[in-house]
Length: 316
Image 1: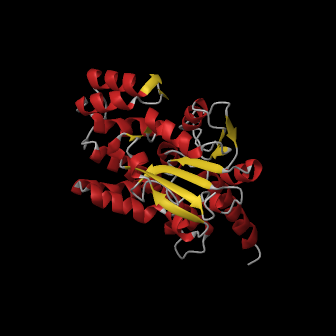
Image 2: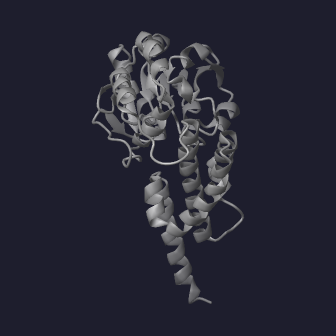
Image 3: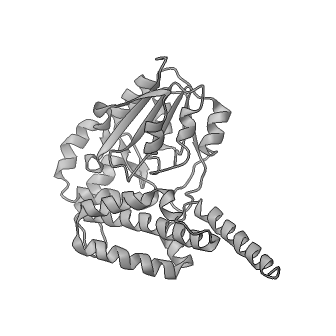
């Protein structure tokens, strides 16, 4: 029996290495390359769902498997738990792609813009290539309805870490809301929101754990810090986060940071898409309020954006 101990230890060690890799949030392609057999099983399950073409059913299924607890099961076998987590991550990533494509009206083949839609979207939303700019709200309201392929935009750019666009009016409103507070952006990605707010006069530091290197090019002004470390190091008065992953493990630290008086979340009203909803409702130090007037300034409207503002109870 003792002869089995080294093998068990090796299995546990290997499982630990894989768990560490999974925490870096690898892309779907990376998961499929490393675990082809698991992908075959997941793909078969997804095929059954997509054949029915019901986007609400797809969204509900994503929500059901999005939480890490869904992969834990009852097995005490480390390798089995790892395989369940691999399948969970594959399922979430793949179903999000499928639901985006279904919402965009594309059931088969590659999704793309034609020349006219692509040119207008580029001029309206980007400064150059995939570098976003504050979107002029007046021009957006005029031009966006004219793009008949507009629902295809987000599925095309989300693989590059772009989940929304910020209007010029949104930046002005957020800057006024934040005021003179020292501000921290957590999970900042490429730091676009922080740069826009800094240009509007906000004292802000952008931070990210850089775990999405496969999708995001991190500039030098985005400090490599996970959210918990950044909150401790900077002791901000205000925190902003744009499109925090659903069921993440870091937002709860915002509510436990004594210096924070204001927390602003830009996300989706669909719970499967963004945010640690359990942390939002489980804390008692902050009052939560949805700001529809700000949500309408997050673009495009097809993503059903939502802005939540948390204020500490003492009102400061």
